[in-house]
Amino acid sequence: MSSFATPAILMGFALLALPGTVKLARRGRIREVLTCVILMVIALVPAFCLIAGIELPRITTTIDRLLSQLLSPELVQDMGFRLP
Amino acid sequence: MSFHQLEGGRVSSRELWFLASVFLLGSSVLIPPGSPAGRDAWAAVIAGCLVGMVVILVYTQLGARFPGKTFVEISHCVFGRIIGKAVSLLFIWYLVHLASLVLSNFGDFFTSTVYRLTPEPVIAGALILVAAYAVSHGVEVLARCSIPIFFIILVIIVLDTTLLLNRFNFYNLLPALEVKPVVFAWTSLGAAAFPFAETAAFMMIFPAVSDDNHIRRAMLRADAAMGLIFTTIAIRNAAVLGPGTTLYTYPSIQVLRLVSIGGVITRAEVLVSTVLIATGFLKFAVLFYGAAIGLAQTLCLSDYRAVIRPLGAVLLVMSLFNFGSVAENIRFAALIYPIYGLFFQLALPACTLAFAALKARLTRSDAPDATAKR
Image (cartoon, rainbow over all chains, first blue to last red; front, side, top):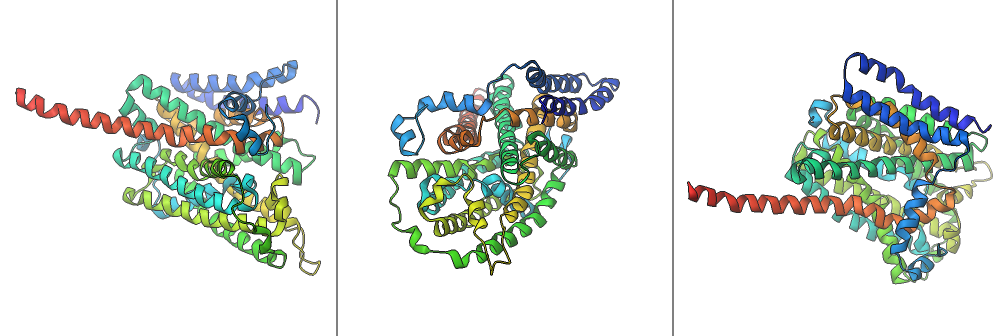
């Protein structure tokens, strides 16, 4: 897959919400429009980061790193995993 | 906005049972609960199922205290507007993150085993489109989808276990319960958090249940029935694969690869893919629906359908940025998820219930004083 395929798919998905948002804007539903725009921006930013070659942190891996500090090293090893 | 202003759908407690059962099967078909305990996974599943029942008792008690209200509305009632919104957003984050994890599991599995040349966003995107269509039609559609899906899955699970009967070696289950107590306890908690207690997401659906006196019974029965199915799967995997169960990323797939009846009936792993497509879709759709309703209630929107498409795009992005590899996924599920998941599934509803009880007691003790002053 070319390096632009993933950002293109992500952008396509984010832009799928555009017609609905325009419809809501015409009806004057400001709250709904704002929510849609914020969600679309959240979806578009990683796509632009991919194009720009900016590495984004992995969500669950970050949570893993934060919470694994609460676990005892013995438990991590007993469960068959390596220490971080 | 109350739930009934946003959504007019109603489901019976029987449909809730089917929906909860298929939801519980979800991605656990791929990563069977209790796997880190190896041949003792069946015991970890039973323990996890019992802990899951405790979690169900907690959140159904909360639902019974506030009938006709979702968790978002309950948290607003109990904690007030600002803290209530913060608690709601925490719960919505959990629903969104869990939905993205289901999507990641779904994409990882298909790109690593079945569709090796297909890009992951295409597979995840296809699931999102179907789920978004179902979610936009409401909870009734999801509940009715679950009934045929449940029976198809039941037939497949019975069929593939029967096809493997000639490979069963029950000596592989011995010596039983040799696993370290700490590992067993942690694995049982892991089995409780994934998948039994994940039904906490149903707190966003309870107001749609028409006979709300039977919610607790339906949820407990679904938990027990799926506990039985997971125990059977754990025994099957350990009896067929032996001590090597823990070595495989997807033990159920590996087990079904061994099916060979006279060299004619082979490659039964396609059955797991069929089950995963059905259960993965429904689990993802329930979480997606819960997140959309929750977001609409927290942000005071007049229609939850407005957020479905942009939320779908966010879920797609999150599913692609969850893990670096499948190994990280398995590490997270086994080590971290018991702490992370049980915070949202048990601690959050339990704190809300405790705070609601305390608030009710304080209000009751204040009431006679007020009457006496008059």
